[in-house]
Length: 132
Image 1 (cartoon, rainbow, N blue to C red):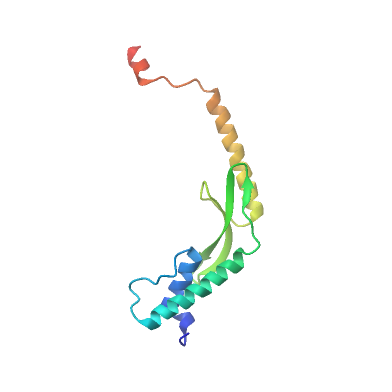
Image 2 (tube, one colour; image 1 turned 45 degrees about the horizontal axis):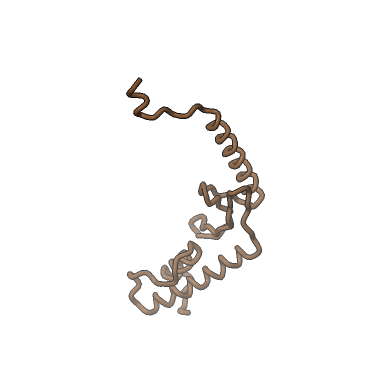
C-alpha cells in the first residue's frame, strides 16, 4: 500500500465500489499502476467492512415480501450504515424490527386492495361499450 493510500481518490473509489456491490475491476480512467493498486486495496477494505456489517443479520420475511440487509454509504465521510431494503418496493428501513413492521403494513394493504378489487364489477370490454 502506498503512503496516504487510504486518502487517495482511487482508494475511496475502490471502497465505495465494493460497498455498493461493484466488481474489483478498476475504472478505465485509472491508468497508473499506483492508482490501480490503491483502488484494489480500497475495494478489498470496503468488501471486508461490508461483510463485517452484514455478518449475522438475516432477511426479514412476511408473506411473499422480503427485506434484505444492505450496506449503504451515508454523509460526506461516506460512513457505512446497515439498512433493510424491501426488495419489492425499494423502501429502506433502519432496523430489522422496523422492516418487520413495514412489511406487515404492506401485506395488510395488499390484502385490503385485493379485497377491494374483488368486490368491484368486472370492467366492460371496449367492444361491449361501443355496441351499447
